[in-house]
Amino acid sequence: MRNLNLDQLQTLIAIADLGTFAAAAQALHLAPPTVSLHIKELEMRLQASLVVRGRRRAELTPMGDALVQEGRKLLAASDDMIELVRRRASGREGLVRIGVSAGVSTRLLPMMLEALARKSPGVEVKLEAVGSSDAMLRLKASTLDIGIVASPQTTVTGIHLVPWREDPLVALLPSSWKPPKLITPQWLAGRRWATFAPATQMHGLIASWFGQSGHNPRPYLTMSYPGALKSLATASQSAAILPLEEVDDQDQSPHVQIRHLNPKLMRPMAVAYRHSPAPSSAVASVLDIIARFGNMRPMKTPTKVKKST
Image (cartoon, helix red, strand yellow):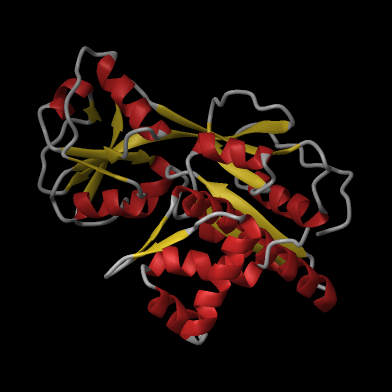
């Protein structure tokens, strides 16, 4: 039995993304008859109808949709394999895929990458914004190498979870407001405030902070990135609750003011990676750099590593 043709699979995915055979042909730099031939041969190979041509758009059948969903993973794995060979041929150390949750500081990440570039210039990092629970599953599936995740997390077999940072959360307020020295749930509940999107650790932490004082206010806005929340306070639109290290650079800004919370609220983070196979030298290098930016007990990075991949 012949294996799937990746070029044909890429053609099907292009049709799914772009909606027509003609658009797929243009994007892939193929003649329209070649696109049709790719789909015909793919359908014959699988003995299933994959695409239905409509007047304006081509629609996937359920079989076609299933093939596209799994095919994206196959093409991504193929790209990783090609990159691996190219790296080894050029003597570079390797590619490390890191899943980063929404609460991770936009200030810390550039500093970590800069430190890594100095220490291990041959290591390339691919950052992906991904929820903490999804990061744990992707580590298990080997589609991520490291996850910077909310803590605690449900135990996943084969995944090592190490405490990394615990940062106090503070309120970032417009400079025109006249707040008390410490921000309480009661005070903030009656004002406009913004927070992280639902289903994130930060959203849950802040909701619990309000809830423990008997309040359940609706946020003015929910967003996925710290920088967007900071901009709301800078523009005098609302308050935002953020990790202190995320807003430390705003301390002297004339547009905002920083206040600590009462009761205190902390944001714990952890670093996750696979036990087996042992981390490559590239992954170990990245773990070492991440550990340097932690503020909890020293994170033990692996001492026995396999050759870089």
